Length: 233
Image (cartoon, rainbow, N blue to C red):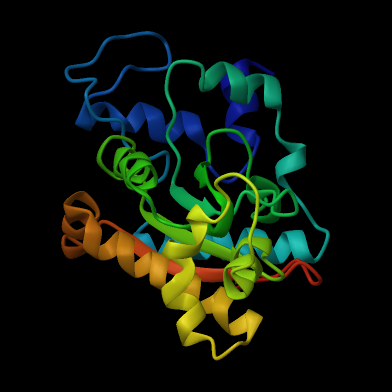
C-alpha cells in the first residue's frame, strides 16, 4: 500500500484529503507545490465549531471507556505530514498538572489539538497570544478551557497560604472563582474554567470576532481524575 493510501486509512482526520482541498485558501501542498498564499493555514477538517467540540467529547468518551483509537495511527506518517505545518481542529487551555494528558484524554494524536498549559488553566497575555495564533493562523474551530478535579492551584488559592517563589502570583487570577465558590473546591474549579473562558471571549478581539462570525466556539469544561470523563461547565 502506498503512503497516500495508508495515510488516508489512519483515522478520522483524513489529513491528505483535507490538505489537498485547502488549496482554495492558499497553503503549501503535501507534494511541496507552492500555492498562492501561505499566510493562512486552514484547519485540517471542515468541522463546524459545534462539531469540533463534539469531536473532543467523543474522543473523551473513548478514553474513559478504554477504547482509544489514536494509538492505532501511523505516527511516522503523521510526523512526516506535520513537519512543515500544523492543522489542528481545536485548541485546549489546560492546567499544567501531570495527571491531565490532553491529547490522550481526548483520544487525539499528532497535529490534532493546539494545546496551551499553565497552572490553574488561567488566562494570561501569553496564553491569549498563543490562542489568537491558533484561531487567526491555524484556524481552530473550538477552544476548550479545561479545569480538573483536585486542582492544586485552585486549592492553594483558596487557602492563600505563604508559598515559595512566585507561586502566589497565580492567586490573583484565581480570586474571582474562589469568591464564587463559597469555600467549595469543586465549585471553585468549575467556576474558574467558566471565568477563564469568558476572559478569552472578552479580552481578545481576534477571538471575539471569530465567535461573532460563527467560526469559533469557546467552552469551559472540567476533567474528572477519578473517572477520566470531561463534563462541560
